[in-house]
Amino acid sequence: MTDIDPQELAERYVAQWIEPDPAKRRDAIERLWADDATHVLQPPVEIREAADRLGFAHQTLRAEGHDAIERRITGSYDHFIVGQGFTFRARGGAVRLDGVVRIGWDALVGGEVHGGGEDLLVLAPDGRIRTDYMFPE
Image (cartoon, rainbow, N blue to C red; front, side, top):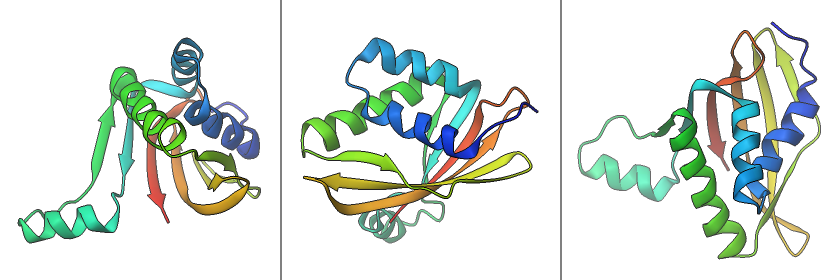
C-alpha cells in the first residue's frame, strides 16, 4: 500500500465536499476514491427511528461507485453549503492503522462549529478510498 499521510488525506477528503466547481469535484472524487468504492452513512437519528418503526433492521445509506458518490457529495453540497450556509473543515489528529484511516470533521456556520463527525476510510491497495463509513455527530 502506498505511503499515505492521514492528515493530508483528511484535508483532501473534506475539500471534495466543499468544492463549488462540479468538474473539480468530480476530479477529486476520481483521485480519492477507488473505482468500486462505497460510501456508507449512518443516517440521522430521525431517519433511523422512522426506519425502525417500519421494520427495517439495517438503517444505513449507501452510495456505490463514482457516479453515485458524486451525486451524494453534490447533494450534500447543495443542501448544506448552498442551502444552509455551512462549510466543513478537517479536524486535526487523523490517524492510520494499517489500511484504515480515521478522520474527524467539523460543520461550521459563520465560523462557529454546529456539528461534525468522524469517518473510517478503508483504503484500497493503491491508497484510494475503497469504503468510507461516515458517522455524523
